[in-house]
Amino acid sequence: PIPAISLCRGMASVDLQAALAVAQEAAREAGAHILRSRGDRDIEVQVKGANASDFVTAVDLQCQKIIFERLGRAFPDHALVGEESPDFASVFPSPKPVWIVDPVDGTTNLVAGIPEVSVCIGLFADDRVVLGVVYNPFRDEMFRATRGGGGAFLNDQKISVNAHKT
Image 1 (cartoon, rainbow, N blue to C red):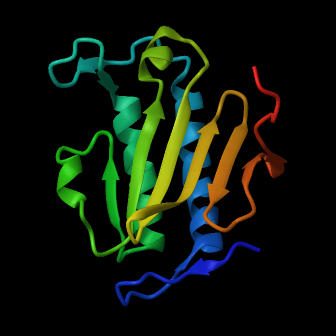
Image 2 (cartoon, rainbow, N blue to C red; image 1 turned 90 degrees about the vertical axis):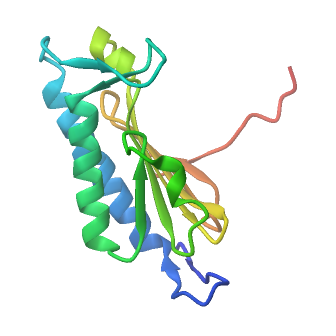
């Protein structure tokens, strides 16, 4: 079992098991949207910011909306910030838990039709990352880890780094 963590600022504890379940559901829901959009060769691409190779699409925006709605319903007292949010830095420092979302990590791949795209969701609480989920919908691979949760997992199988030095 994954523990609840107590936050030092007098807030109620965060139930990491519940948070992980919601984050995985949100990632799968956004991943399903990505898969549905895969055949759409008319994905509208916009350049964001000054970097001409930094793209945003309607898929990015819809996936962020899907994730924010799911997390917001489950954790109305938490802050939500995403890569497509206009003022990412304004959330920090935060006295409450903050969900950090990259709704489509690999937008360039998505636009090019390369099936290497992930949905990334993290939870930051009490000045540290306490939960992370990375979901690749094309491979149906769900990576996850929680602080105090016994390590990292891929589709419920524990994973670790190789101890072999190169």
